[in-house]
Length: 377
Image 1 (cartoon, rainbow, N blue to C red):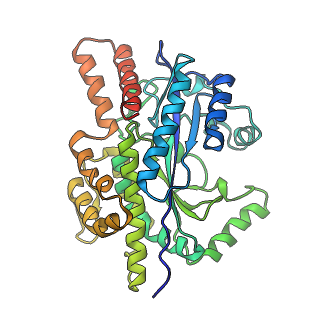
Image 2 (tube, rainbow, N blue to C red):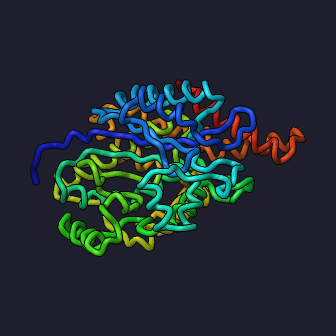
Image 3 (cartoon, helix red, strand yellow):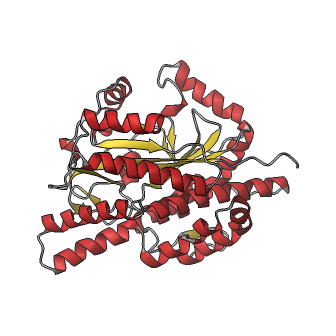
């Protein structure tokens, strides 16, 4: 098989929560803040479903190095403007103690429609994610790669975990966000599809019935983007540390190039049933990197360090070709320092050992998240 190599351009979207610097609780964004961020960042900034959320999106970047500079600019601008209103952004997928019942949705036609359509389920959507787009201009290629990349989604999720707390309680999970998000329709792992045509025909049924207006209402963990010629990973928790975001984006980009390279040799990654992949997805939600996934080939549970080292070996050539080897190799540093969920729990436990109240210990977790957001800027 031959063909021109895609550019594998990359785009990153991040959702942030806004907290009041005095109470460290969630706070709605003042309209002036929204207007000033929009003026400074143009189409790269937008409101989100809840008033306490905002979203940024990078430019179309040729490589992860470009994405680093753009994300640093976006994060810095939001942080600077928010600070003038005594607010700060945090890049964590759940706020450690604020209650969803106290939040209000953004009054916008799209979000009014979501409230009416999804009722109480969407009211609980006090969660933030990280979406990684990788450019693949051929429609059928996007579907073929989507089918294969699904295998690796739990491995990527485990590295990203940043949502151990929910409404003041340690959930016991490293990624609680997905338990909230999975209550929505059209979520979870994508189905195995034979072609772009099959995907379009399936989506058209829902559109023709008036159930959705377009494919942007399909919220799978991995999907063909509605707006761009990209494959969009949506499974990740948002990361407090910029370098973790870049590592996850680089790994996604390198994995896609690796699968494309196999295709050029008339090879492919083995397709496993979603029943099995979902078990690894659950293990990533529950344990993060502290327990490993099932290796379906050897039929054993392996340490997460072994799993990620095997992936790094698989994509080494591709990471070199894409110029993101350093970012990909940074995954090993995450094994040493832990995920955000691990660090949040450590801050909480240290505070309790220092005889802080539970309320104050949770506030220290939020303060830690504010510090981590600003650390790389």
